[in-house]
Length: 283
Image 1 (cartoon, helix red, strand yellow):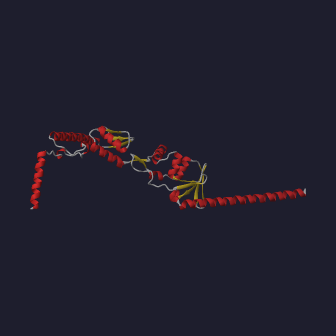
Image 2 (cartoon, helix red, strand yellow):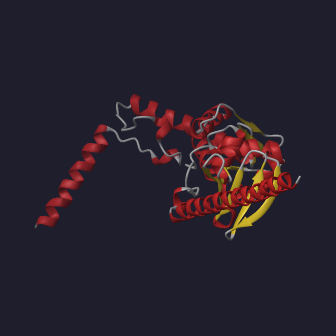
Image 3 (cartoon, helix red, strand yellow):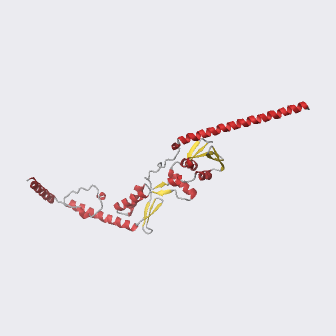
């Protein structure tokens, strides 16, 4: 019995020593992993601009609408993660905040603007994180997807383009149809309609409040002016005078009386008068 007892005690000692060794090995492995994570985070921080979303990207302001990138970037990163993933716990390690989900282990950098997932070894800013989660690859699509999710507005109207298009169309159009076509061309959309009753202009899916009566009055005046210009040109042709007008509709719409018809005889008289004045100066 005594021999068996000694063997049993040795087994306990060996087992305890084995547990201690395994514990030390785990601790050493964890220490190395912490050091590796810390080194990785320091590496990212040393080149943080490579991971930061450039606020000037994706917005050429050439379209009718554009994404409100500042509002998108103001969304809290933890709120984004909690919407798309299940947060299991949050903790700190080496002064860095960590967020562990069921699929990722994020470290939070740059005051919450950047996260790094140690499971996938991928670094995200808010924009490319949303690109991946929403399955889109451009800012406008991202903003529209966010609007559906949150019910908030993340799309802005390019007011400068709208104002310019309406002004250009108002100054040039001679019919409402022509007005619509000019606006559609400038805004690169397929639909435009002036609603005189409700005093609005519908451009694609955007509704703009406008003084539609003033627009219609100007369009009608343009039409009258254009007819007057045509009358002036026809009169000039009947007089045998060539006017240097390539395209009547490109003329700045003003008082048609400013277009002067000069006959050949009047032109010769003007030339003689200029020659006479010139001789007087040379004396």
